[in-house]
Length: 428
Ligand code: S3P
Image (cartoon, rainbow, N blue to C red; front, side):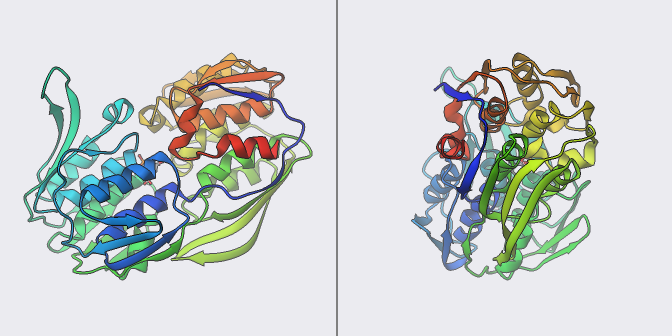
């Protein structure tokens, strides 16, 4: 599908962004091994979370509407065939951790994009724990499709794993395996990443301890069911924060957005760049902070200097941050973002190509971008590369551009935000 987006004069209105994708995956996975029925309202309606739900059903779990019927820590059963994770890295990596600890074997597969993404970062620590785990090729027939094979050897031992990459997916995979391992399992991260797994485990009564960059879990016999209204996805809200901040005279209210501090570094960056973002109605949902956000206008000043730690803290927001940097006066340096090369697409290249086509001054570096602004953007034909965050970031660029932009492969917004273009039409 090609989405056509025109430059707009103003964005106004009030919307509810989809349920947080990261929290949705965790609620389905942890709810599946809880003792009893969990109630999970407001799940992300995107295809990624649907992949997790389908995998859990294939493992014998009943998921119906907002009900997840947990069968206890030992309640999963072997799936009849390969578990299809679709486009979702979170599904594959978190399930690899959970399934590595099961007494039966599982096979996880994904689409072409997911098949190209690095899995060694999960395979190695799982093996250290004594799990059977391999990322190899299914040679059946003519096709050579990568697959993740895990599980079947049920005796895992706790380790202290120092993760070389800042990745919440890696951390969560090891913690999920750790729930079944003898002794304690700890992950020490180079930089703090989103902590939704730890927060939900604590809310479900697990033995989890957090001290700075170190998270530890103990072997867990039983988890309490969870009851949660999933907060709105901050990473989805980020597109509207930038769009409403950049389009003069806008005022957009985003209802019930998750504002867990491990997710909101991007909002602080926007504020430091002169964006006016107001929070109201703060509350907690199963340990997760939530608030309404209102954004309108900005008073842009200096360019941006972002290094590795800061880039990791706003990894999913970097594509739309690149759009913003085209409007800052001077040369913005966004560095330490090499992880973007191994996301659903090579996001560094995808944004450099898309924004260059729209007239931005953007140079691609090994681990980031050099962007000189401000530049008036012009509508163009651009390619989402089948990556939801690229499609949405380029749509934000289109809103501040002159004329019309055509975004190829725009249906990929279904991965995390099926209503994105409806919301755009309503706000613009
Ligand atoms: C996620 C972790 C991040 C993030 C992804 C969701 C999660 O990935 O980019 O969108 O839910 O744990 P990495 O762990 O690869 O950094």
